Picture: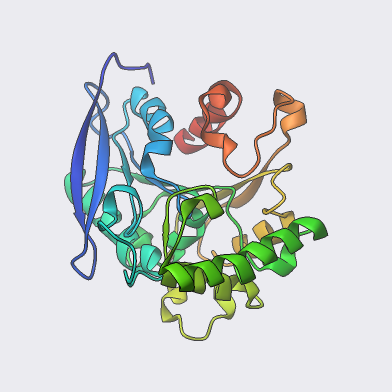
Length: 292
């Protein structure tokens, strides 16, 4: 599909399943096929939607409407103070993600729906009650985050120190976790504590016994591709393989292994995929898979 000359952006309000209001942004091409897929981009933990604006614009240039949004407690969907804000780690997946899917289904009825999830955004959609509406699911740097599945032992100790000790202690003391701890936006206290619990639970969220929404992983009937960067020490191949097994109804599932040394020689890591310098080597490949 040929690029279109203009992308319009506008704020959109989403209403989560419990009534909480989320702030989203729609990237809408001035022209494009009336049946072009609508794409939803879901953020990694603590990453603001603005980080994905360039990638969203790239997809919109191809004639696709694209929606980005901040989950509760993050960016423009956060209250004035996070101290005492009750958002849990699970709430983005079970309450907020369904709102984005419902909005897209109502706004663009009959169109294919694609989901691009970064880290949490890739596995959290498995908890969404309406994920059966999706036609494609592209997970970037997403995995079953059981810390036991991290291959690099030094990295696993560093992750464990931050997630199991430093993060929870600071979150309890302050009532939230400052974003500089994890390289993103400030995080609600309960989200940090639950994140910590899931990562030390064997099997990650699939080993948690108080999460009935994990059954919705069986509702995903989209093609699923999980992209793993070989220089991302947090995302080991075992963790990606483990997550992929939990999409049993998906007709096509695969892992896209990305070796930075074979592309540009520049590091990509956990966050780099969405940087503009990787437009040609990576974004184009992502688009080809989504369009296939």
